[in-house]
Amino acid sequence: MSKYWNQRTRALSPYIPGEQPRERKFIKLNTNENPYPPSPEVIAAIRNAANDDLCLYPDPECLELRTAIARRYALTPEQVFVGNGSDEILAFAFAAFFENGAVALPVLFPDITYSFYPVYARLWGTPFELVPLRDDFSLSIDDYDRPNGGVVIANPNAPTGCVLRLEDARLLVEQQTVYGRIALFDEAYMAFASEPGSLVGYINEYPNLLTVHTLSKAASLAGLRVGYAIAHAELIEGLRRVRDSFNSYTLDRLALAGATAAIRHSAYYDDCDRRIIATRKRVSTQLAALGFEFVPSSANFIFTRHPAIKGSALFEALRERGILTRRWDVSRIADYLRVSIGTDADMDAFLAVCADIACV
Ligand code: PMP
Image 1 (cartoon, rainbow, N blue to C red):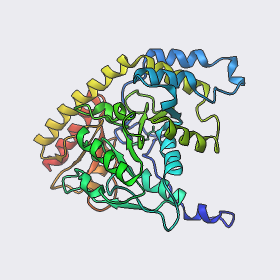
Image 2 (image 1 turned 90 degrees about the vertical axis):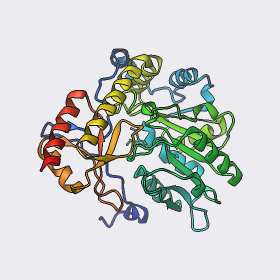
Image 3 (image 1 turned 135 degrees about the horizontal axis):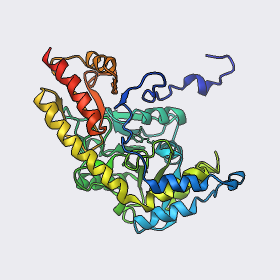
Image 4 (image 1 turned 180 degrees about the vertical axis):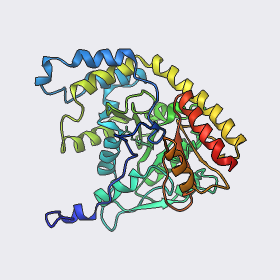
């Protein structure tokens, strides 16, 4: 705490990202990174962009990348926004679409979801209400059927891995139309879902639908920091207004080049993602055989607990054996670990420790 901090800075409770260890070599199953490297086309594009043009600012319109994304979804670039990771887009969306102050209606999101949402809400002074998920971590859209300031849903959800069925997701957007508010769907993990659930195809139908996506997970590019939003052009313009009141160049030349190559060559990582889904299936079966409990995951992680082992003990035992996972010391989920799906070899190492612990 410094006397030079203003009121806002004093009141902040920043998000704490998963550990990125520097000294010891860990098997990293803690931040939902993709264990497979980016495609050769992406690396070549970034190398190619490392040239004398770096003395020039990048394109503030990010037009080449937005055009590539628009083409992939048969949309127009006006319906696409790009940002420095989807976290940045979420921050802009909270600023652009949710009211702040004491009289504003609360924005609704589940009690167990991406822990950055309350951080953004507090940053912008937006009132919010946590809506409890059911005991099995599934979401009831009826709980959101009331006047509100907006709804934010991670689908599939994190850290639970539960997916909301497409019909329910659409109904939720329709409910929000009645209340004249935004439905923000954060689809960071949708590429790993077992059935198609993305709302991207419905943005022409619903002018209050904002879908947010990232290249960090499915496209193996967590290190490049690129995300995108797809929505009606008026919502995209709203995001732009916020961005341009903040920083005109949120994506640098290397990120633009790498991300454009990733979007154009998606077959490579579609294949990696299929491998991750297969590994998830195998690990789920083996964890179940060891007595672990979990809800079926639609993401690149499994949210699991063992009925006879405390979450903290499991977390520490894995850490001691060189395996990092993620755990939140909060009610309802303190005994759960979120375990990202790594390579088959990573997961064999994880399962070996689990087998040891579960037999004690
Ligand atoms: N949404 C969800 C649900 C996430 O879990 C994450 C990753 N922590 C993000 C968004 C942010 O991803 P990025 O900023 O890397 O695009």
